[in-house]
Length: 104
Image (cartoon, rainbow, N blue to C red; front, side, top):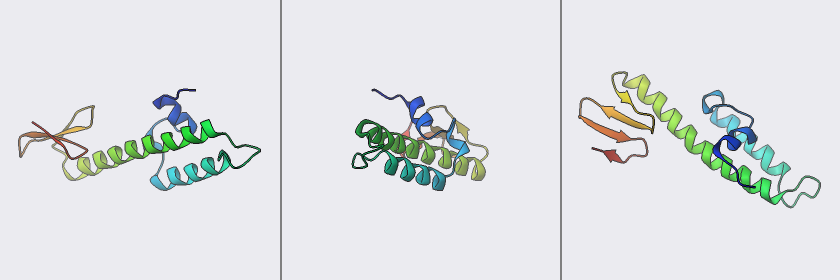
């Protein structure tokens, strides 16, 4: 079965990344990965286990973007934000991608 990004949120039983803390995300990942690990016979499911790992990777990335945006908004309220994760710094006059890559 092919999972989408909305399925990743459903796997961890959240609707948006802002309603969970990083510690809670790690805790849920550990519980789910132990439950669906292929070596555990009653509940073991290799496909579900791989989906949990992919969901965790995706949600960690989304968590980093969310936390970075929150920090930037707190310390730099005059900056502009774009939906793809870009931030405009008016003092330097350029766009900054949250991954560290600069967009001019």
